[in-house]
Length: 300
Ligand code: ADP
Image 1: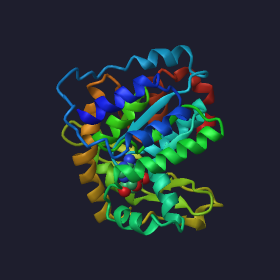
Image 2 (image 1 turned 90 degrees about the horizontal axis):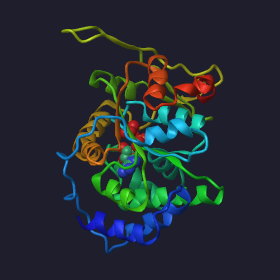
Image 3 (image 1 turned 45 degrees about the vertical axis):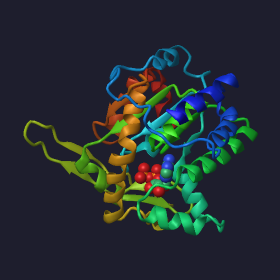
């Protein structure tokens, strides 16, 4: 209770910020040593609202002018980055992936780098303090550039992170992407990144046969364009052993975050029916953004 109620008080007293611009300083303050860790505020049994959150109605009316504050949840390999990045292009808000912030830090020669390398390459979570510090700096940089709104990907990943975020800003929608378990490992192992442009591709061809009344599922590879083909690299934490560890950690640490947002009526469950061609238009429909059809190609 301590974290959530104290953060809420701090945020309310400061007339709750509505844009990313105002968020970072509260994140830093929320992580000051006087805040202790707790996840006891959760009551996952209350109001398990599986309907569309109310925020979607607002979007339908004013999709362009609104600076959305959204979160993407979902297991490693589900495609959070792919869909968050497309929506970011479509809605004109920054896509902020904490995994990218961690990788940027790893690539730097900063003092944190070697400490992070060990944690990330074992598939473990970075401490809440470090991740919030990285996120705060990213938001601060965005503020300087005049950014507002965000689509967060990979944050929050613990109930404590969710409590802190909820205390300092108004998240209006959390999209929980879900994909059949059989596909997750293969998707992670097939992931490739262009070392030059940073583009994300996937060489896995997933073909799950229909079984016991469950339909089959096909996900085509996402091949790189010719100019990237010879520059592909694999993330060091995308090995079978580490991906399995990340999936276990997701179940233990991040699954409860779904309940956190579900109980607050903010969670939109979205079962991916297949690859991008099958899923993208359905996702837009689920988000009441289907009248952005003409802009769909621009988001790709
Ligand atoms: P994934 O494919 O598992 O979703 P990400 O690219 O989001 O991976 O994150 C890569 C790694 O960065 C994670 O395994 C973890 O070590 C670290 N990380 C990213 N976001 C967080 C977070 N919110 N809290 C703690 N660690 C994080």
